[in-house]
Length: 132
Image (tube, rainbow, N blue to C red; front, side, top):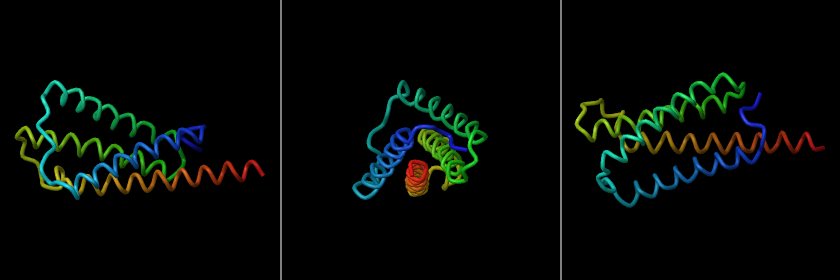
Protein backbone atom coordinates (compact mmCIF):
# COMPACT_ATOMS: atom_id res chain seq x y z
CA UNK A 1 0.00 0.00 0.00
CA UNK A 2 1.32 3.43 -1.01
CA UNK A 3 1.23 6.48 1.16
CA UNK A 4 0.23 8.77 -1.74
CA UNK A 5 -1.80 8.05 -4.86
CA UNK A 6 -0.23 10.54 -7.26
CA UNK A 7 3.24 10.08 -8.67
CA UNK A 8 3.56 13.89 -8.70
CA UNK A 9 3.43 13.88 -4.89
CA UNK A 10 6.41 11.52 -4.80
CA UNK A 11 8.23 13.77 -7.26
CA UNK A 12 7.54 16.85 -5.13
CA UNK A 13 8.65 15.17 -1.92
CA UNK A 14 11.82 13.87 -3.54
CA UNK A 15 12.60 17.41 -4.72
CA UNK A 16 12.18 18.76 -1.19
CA UNK A 17 14.44 16.09 0.32
CA UNK A 18 17.01 16.50 -2.47
CA UNK A 19 17.13 20.30 -2.18
CA UNK A 20 17.53 20.01 1.57
CA UNK A 21 20.39 17.52 1.17
CA UNK A 22 22.13 19.59 -1.52
CA UNK A 23 21.84 22.76 0.58
CA UNK A 24 23.22 20.98 3.65
CA UNK A 25 26.09 19.45 1.65
CA UNK A 26 26.94 22.80 0.05
CA UNK A 27 26.79 24.54 3.40
CA UNK A 28 28.99 21.86 5.00
CA UNK A 29 31.65 22.10 2.29
CA UNK A 30 31.61 25.89 2.15
CA UNK A 31 31.45 26.84 5.79
CA UNK A 32 31.38 25.23 9.21
CA UNK A 33 30.19 28.29 11.14
CA UNK A 34 26.51 28.98 11.72
CA UNK A 35 24.82 31.03 8.99
CA UNK A 36 23.62 33.62 11.51
CA UNK A 37 21.85 33.79 14.80
CA UNK A 38 18.12 33.57 14.33
CA UNK A 39 15.75 35.53 16.58
CA UNK A 40 13.47 33.51 18.86
CA UNK A 41 10.40 34.84 17.03
CA UNK A 42 11.49 32.71 14.08
CA UNK A 43 13.01 29.76 15.97
CA UNK A 44 9.98 29.01 18.16
CA UNK A 45 7.60 28.49 15.19
CA UNK A 46 10.29 26.40 13.46
CA UNK A 47 10.64 24.16 16.50
CA UNK A 48 6.86 23.80 16.82
CA UNK A 49 6.61 23.00 13.08
CA UNK A 50 9.39 20.43 13.27
CA UNK A 51 7.81 18.80 16.31
CA UNK A 52 4.47 18.63 14.51
CA UNK A 53 6.11 17.21 11.37
CA UNK A 54 7.88 14.55 13.44
CA UNK A 55 4.59 13.46 14.99
CA UNK A 56 2.75 13.48 11.64
CA UNK A 57 5.51 11.39 10.04
CA UNK A 58 5.38 8.84 12.84
CA UNK A 59 1.58 8.62 12.66
CA UNK A 60 1.72 8.19 8.86
CA UNK A 61 3.88 5.07 9.22
CA UNK A 62 0.73 3.02 9.79
CA UNK A 63 -0.71 4.13 6.42
CA UNK A 64 1.91 2.41 4.27
CA UNK A 65 3.21 -1.10 3.83
CA UNK A 66 6.34 -0.01 1.97
CA UNK A 67 9.52 -0.50 3.97
CA UNK A 68 11.16 2.35 2.08
CA UNK A 69 8.32 4.76 2.85
CA UNK A 70 8.39 3.73 6.49
CA UNK A 71 12.14 4.31 6.58
CA UNK A 72 11.74 7.77 5.01
CA UNK A 73 9.07 8.65 7.57
CA UNK A 74 11.22 7.50 10.50
CA UNK A 75 14.22 9.39 9.12
CA UNK A 76 12.06 12.47 8.64
CA UNK A 77 11.15 12.33 12.33
CA UNK A 78 14.82 11.92 13.19
CA UNK A 79 15.72 14.96 11.03
CA UNK A 80 13.09 17.00 12.88
CA UNK A 81 14.35 15.86 16.27
CA UNK A 82 17.97 16.56 15.30
CA UNK A 83 16.94 20.07 14.25
CA UNK A 84 15.23 20.60 17.60
CA UNK A 85 18.29 19.21 19.42
CA UNK A 86 20.48 21.66 17.48
CA UNK A 87 18.29 24.55 18.55
CA UNK A 88 18.30 23.33 22.16
CA UNK A 89 22.09 23.09 22.10
CA UNK A 90 22.42 26.59 20.64
CA UNK A 91 20.44 28.06 23.54
CA UNK A 92 22.57 26.31 26.11
CA UNK A 93 21.13 22.85 26.75
CA UNK A 94 23.77 20.20 27.33
CA UNK A 95 23.06 17.32 24.94
CA UNK A 96 25.17 14.36 23.77
CA UNK A 97 27.34 15.33 20.80
CA UNK A 98 25.64 13.14 18.13
CA UNK A 99 22.30 14.86 18.77
CA UNK A 100 23.59 18.26 17.67
CA UNK A 101 26.33 17.13 15.29
CA UNK A 102 26.02 18.81 11.89
CA UNK A 103 27.63 15.88 10.01
CA UNK A 104 25.04 13.49 11.53
CA UNK A 105 22.23 15.85 10.47
CA UNK A 106 23.66 16.04 6.93
CA UNK A 107 24.13 12.26 6.70
CA UNK A 108 20.58 11.49 7.83
CA UNK A 109 19.23 14.10 5.39
CA UNK A 110 21.20 12.62 2.49
CA UNK A 111 20.13 9.05 3.27
CA UNK A 112 16.52 10.23 3.43
CA UNK A 113 16.85 11.92 0.03
CA UNK A 114 18.33 8.75 -1.47
CA UNK A 115 15.52 6.60 -0.08
CA UNK A 116 12.93 9.09 -1.37
CA UNK A 117 14.52 8.82 -4.83
CA UNK A 118 14.46 5.03 -4.61
CA UNK A 119 10.77 5.07 -3.69
CA UNK A 120 10.01 7.50 -6.53
CA UNK A 121 11.67 5.13 -8.99
CA UNK A 122 9.69 2.20 -7.57
CA UNK A 123 6.40 4.08 -7.90
CA UNK A 124 7.25 5.14 -11.45
CA UNK A 125 8.11 1.55 -12.38
CA UNK A 126 4.87 0.26 -10.84
CA UNK A 127 2.81 2.83 -12.73
CA UNK A 128 4.63 2.02 -15.95
CA UNK A 129 3.96 -1.71 -15.46
CA UNK A 130 0.28 -0.97 -14.78
CA UNK A 131 0.06 1.00 -18.05
CA UNK A 132 1.26 -1.99 -20.09
